Image (tube, rainbow, N blue to C red):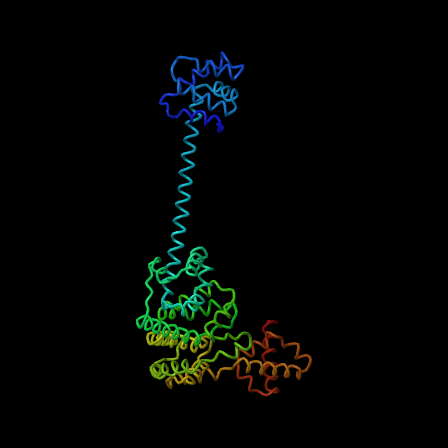
Length: 430
């Protein structure tokens, strides 16, 4: 239904029952439809009521397509005309409701965004003491992150602040009270102390990050939980900035921390004095209990986990050092593990030491390699007929049967291999 037809119906909207009137219009048009002036004269002269409606329609048609409009009204007929108009009203109402819902959602989203900005502004409001002298420093502290994270609301706030003669009152509009004087100075001092404590912690553990994205998640897993629990505000701020940053090394630099990379980082990650102090204290407190360890793998897992729990209960930082020290020992054999623990200062029993000594008596890979070298030399010294009896499998079998062969002379080895080879050939022939 086009706008002109809609207008023709709406110009008569004050009439409660308009359908009979449009029937009159159709009848007059059917008799006087060749000329608009003739139609107009005939419609106005009709005496079947609706005088005001007749005048209103004539004036509307005179400015809107004249006879073409009357023809469209007549062709549609009263029933179809009003049906189409009611459909138009329904569609218009639905569209209006949809627009209202969209506007409501936008308003809701915008409200949530504003609330997040207000929470951020509230969090950092302690950095401003309410004076103009301190304002620029406050803005430099929060503006970049605020504009990046809450662009619309942050920009609105900073624009208003730039034009405001009473910035304290502006904060009050956001529900934020700005302290001043001695109380504000004390709060700022406390917050500065908390921030410095976090920076000290971050500095201490920065050596665990080598400056690469590949190592970042491991670093975060090492420090985040303790940092958020101990320095919640400043740690959360740091990790939020890091998550949004494309240059984390530069972020550390803002905290006065230099991150090494590559070989420089690899060479620069020993435990600092505090970390070594925590480790020494843990060994002194819990190392003597290892005297009860029986040297078994199961016992190792039990004592290792107990040590982790004990140090973590003392101080999560102590646990981090303990894990770094003991975790590599999981891959060692008993002899090497015992030696490492004793180097750390743990008390290891005589029984465990003896077990370690027994294990140490077994041939090492280096011993086996030496024996193999001697065997090869011995094979070369054999007569050609005897050499044919010696195969790589035979060499391996000999070594595994008697590791002490590593101490035999080449002549003795040659005799052993000749005997083993002959016996094997005899068995194969039989």
